[in-house]
Length: 570
Ligand code: GLC
Image (cartoon, rainbow, N blue to C red; front, side, top):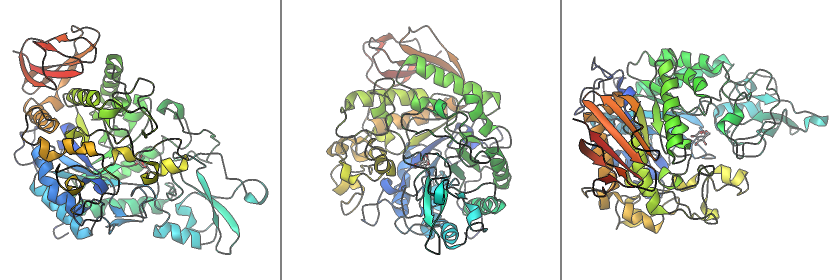
């Protein structure tokens, strides 16, 4: 990168109004109210026709994001990887996998994004490397007990001949969290820990060499102009000393079930992030956001305490069923916990790991977060899902704080719920021997043009996962400029959110709309906005004031079921 500053916008993005959370206007706190669009590179846009999305494909489609009105984008991993877990198994943190392009393509993407006023966050995967990473290969080639193995968690097995794993820890994807290696002399050897796939060996974060290496990786990408990092499995890096016993399988577990587990949310992890913060503070305006599946909310808030991360996803809403009490509890507890440490909330309804919210919100409470949906499961009601999805997004985009969108939700895309087994690639499907469908259904390549091959995803019509026929009606070109389309609804929401200063607002609940309505006022820079979402079967009275947004047709002055309105009060 020629000037070390790259394409990072240094002040408020062009065309953006002054951010009420950033009165100094130097852009340093841009993230507090930002809307960030997550891109899953393999499924966004394919420029070379191999059926897998790539960086030049993204760069060519960046105007779509600028036009949508988001502040930035987060790119899921595009680094060199054998793709045991779709790139979350990194073999080289400083190079781009050929399937996605080159480092020059990454530079061009960052520069073009900067020109369009979009900040770029990249994914950092620090809990584990790939088993093809130079460090892990060196560890396999070296003798037990040496410095090469000390970067990972190698242990001798238990029992006669060390034939049993060192403890009973399980992989999040199913099966044991330990794999035995063959020593260089050909004998059965030590075991290594992998909280995820066997191709994702966990690093030992007590090792100073590991810490140094990651400081250097942060600097490498900051110098190329990125605005920060989404930190993968941020709650997993520190393990309890001695790796104490914990013999539970993750299938069907909730976040509460793993409270106190020796591999998650250990206090020592915060020390790692304090070190990273010092690195980030040398690049003003750069941030890190943690993916930490941590409960209770007070423990999660520790990740965003002063000197730590800037943001952490508040996943309560992503897990909540479509019921007033659940939405309200999720919103209140997240606001409270973040507020207590002076942090902001960061919301999200969909990402590359969960069933898309347009589909998820049709599922019954208690079964509303399946690990994928397959052709043998009951098929969801797509129309109902779209209605609820739009209504839910209009709730979230009116909340104080920042929001992360997932590619395709601005088109109203549903989950692909009928992918045949033979095309599935998620390791959780394989490791659980098909007991769960896995995450491929939310990762299907995007439809851009209804009448083009692969709906415009790829010039050759190839697509690494098959797209359902129904994607034609969600294609971006079918929605652009069409009043009432989901794409135009998202554009309006983002514009109004900015104009009304909603991200920097203060929330107060209003109980006056009955038990089936989720209603709150948010006081932003431009006055008071009343948000009413009707989650019940009967219409709700429309409040007085100017309706500036409705996610569905209003029924004779009433808010129909599964509809949200934004009303500016006089
Ligand atoms: C995170 C990622 C997920 C990945 C896992 C292991 O949860 O979001 O996609 O499989 O970490 O890296």
